Length: 216
Image (cartoon, rainbow, N blue to C red; front, side, top):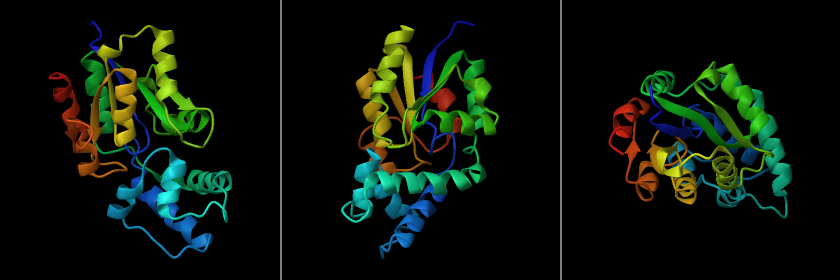
């Protein structure tokens, strides 16, 4: 079968359902560092975003008291201790299989550190669906634009044949910077209203993707 094109999947919040766990990690961080505020899911989705450093500021951390690199490391230590309990998102595995049958090549393009990404994908038995697992070199979660641009340059892929699928406004920014199409998923780290503000193609169930991608 001739390949239809390439899908770049976001990982956290899109293929791996870590939203509630990440929210709980944020509230834990606030508690142990002496901040009074706590976030329910709706409020968390309103403040989350990239770069992660700016999200920490919106959450209320004072970097003069608690420098960002220290907070980032402490968050990752706590997150990594519990991330194994995070499941694959609903219908993710079936959707990956359906898209593969339809001829799509699939890769992950993530703002996670690459070694963590490889470990998390492999632990959930999804590695065989992907031709590439693209992650950052550090834990600071700034942007995956440069990562995607470098991969496109080296691979020779036509951006017009590619689709970015994610759960945040940053994924739409990545798609625009790379010149790819974009679909956003409402089951992740940002609200539907935030996603619809930046992308015309928004789904609430990953199972909707195979048919939607036929129309893009």
